[in-house]
Amino acid sequence: MFAAPPVIKTEVFARVPENLRKSGTPSNWIDNQPGLTHTHSFLEGPSFDLDGNLYCVDIAHGRIFKVSNEGVFDVVTEYDGWPNGLKIDKHGQIFIADYKHGIMKLDPKTGRVEAVLERYRAERFKGVNDLVFASNGDMYFTDQGLSGLHDPTGRVFRYRESGALDCILDNVPSPNGLVLSRDETSLYLAVTRANAVWRVPFMPDGGVAKVGLYVQMTGGSGPDGMALDNEGGLAVAHVGFGVVWHFCPRGEPRARIESCEGMLTTNMAYGGADNRDLFITESETGTILRAKLDVPGREMYSHI
Image (cartoon, rainbow, N blue to C red; front, side):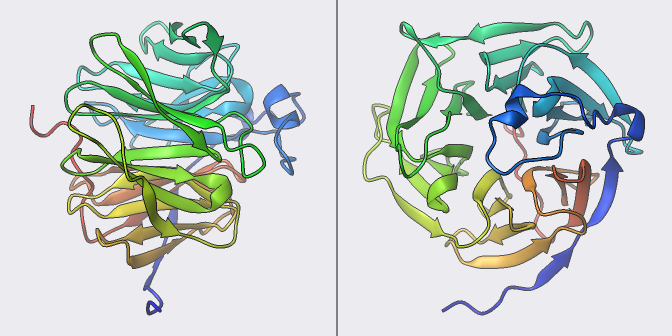
């Protein structure tokens, strides 16, 4: 048994202002989420661009927000979609995992959102959830849909810079957040309905083998978004539990980061002057929380 990890408190960094809250506005996405009742917003996908600007999404109402260093929300775009994850590649391009449409790209100057990937071969995706980039430009993303223990058919894809699209896993009960290991020889995958994080090792040819259980969690709804620190430790948002767990590279709990607001801690991104601040989306109350950690987050493109 592990000793209880130390507790790290969070503070509210930013809150969706009242004039941007859409309480009572219909949302087909919310209507199809079991147990979800609030409709003002649903924050997810926090990511910093190359200039240090924080972006995040509102799945419920198809909005992309840009949040200033002072915590002020600005609507970059609002469109007919369900943006779930957001990541920025090494060239500064903003990509969206849109549950309704597939993989999209955002032009932050015009607010235009255009499709990058809508299908795998001839079929539409189940409902893409999150994405991450490798140092060589390859994109990995999850296709979750409504999969779960009753239907373990969620998928993980790799979209190579060459344009090739490979399905590397097709048996996952609700694949969600994902990050690459420090040396990029494996993928960590949040499997929400199994309340677990899987480790997915890569073979030399790019395939996978010996996929295993890395962390088994209990309670809440399961792991959601994740982020890697500079030592290879893993931060995991435990949605429904109101906590982000910080694991050391061995998979031992290093810290329990507690929400000072609601229970829907969905995702996170490292930022701040020394990259030691963890910015966490809390979707129940429409807030972005901040916690100070001892170990800085991994620099996404420090090798370039």
